[in-house]
Length: 143
Image (tube, rainbow, N blue to C red; front, side, top):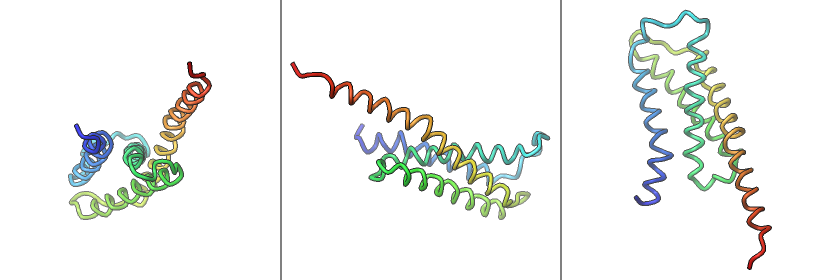
């Protein structure tokens, strides 16, 4: 498989499919049965857009900006947040659904949290392991 196709399948296709999943979910009327846990819908929004933020981050890591962590994080949060806003606008046109500012806020907080946690827990650990490996290789003397 060519490198660009492999990169697309591994990093961009999951993001596209996830966005499509959210779009299809939003195009249907709200479920009849929602658990009666307070603010559960906001928690679900936050989790969904946390995942989306992570998927944007992973996809953007394949671009030239991959070495600019702050730009990666910012673009990932902004992209997921804008998708959340557009999703709420979309829902305002779907029968038996409505747009809520609280959902947008939950989407933004979720996107930020997901990207921040992913960068802090996954990416920075991988970077530390890579730096350690590079320093160990650099310390070895050639034969």
